[in-house]
Length: 242
Image (tube, rainbow, N blue to C red; front, top):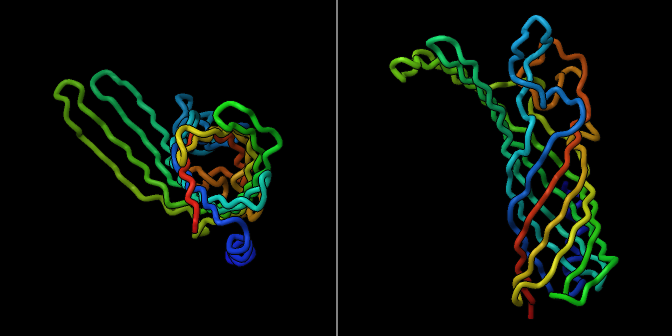
């Protein structure tokens, strides 16, 4: 990311004296046949080759972006997003409930390039397209196994484990493309909403690790692309520098 920062900083200093600080919710939904979307443990264990992660639904996260206009149609900037992946599963037996969970945090640092092709007269609105090359860091996962006695409502066994899936650390290069809209709420406050598609590990995949987001390497022969649909709802503050 250092070369990206060195390229962007001179442009930030020379362009218009306006910074746009944006923060809000950023959700991620893994798509495709990535094993991280499958259940942690299949009910038919004879057919299961490896543990899944249970990340089958929309995963919550937060985002913070700083944008800077180069012209009325073009912006550049930097962004940080963090997604909190969580997979949950329960097995109900006669007198015991078994709870499984697997959690993992993924942090992305992105260089933002944005183009505004359309403007609307209402609320100074606009539509935009953006492209985000990303540096992605995957934290160690946490696996929790818990047995609960349903008659007494107490935990009879609990296993809480930090998962280290070598090779570590886990860093990849990804990319996200977005389409969205923005507009003015009350100057200097604005809103932005967008949807996009990206790949977390477009470059730098390592087959010896197995899959990017699953707990263990057993039964995994490769690291597939981790494709995702991303949706953000953001609040923006525009700061003019005198």
